[in-house]
Image (cartoon, rainbow, N blue to C red):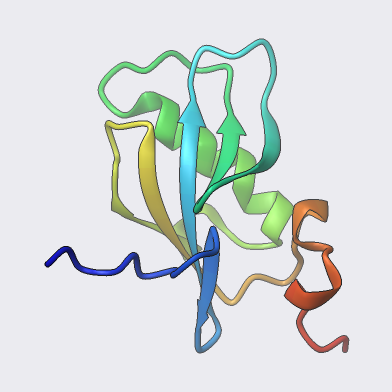
Length: 109
């Protein structure tokens, strides 16, 4: 029996104050951008080429300010050198617009 995806039917799940996020990466894109959820993954495009994990490193530098965290607050659980990856973002201070669906919001400050 296959283990269930840690995020269930969503592209993310909260583990306390840690946001667990499944990513479908698109390296060598024309621009850095967060796309739409695709199944249980969030599409994220980056301009960096997929060489020895450099696109993932670029992705973390792109995502950190969007979540209001330092790059060191983002852990790559798996997929450093793969388009399919999972990130753990420690205590994000903000969420990109793709999280703005009413059922996805955290309690406002």
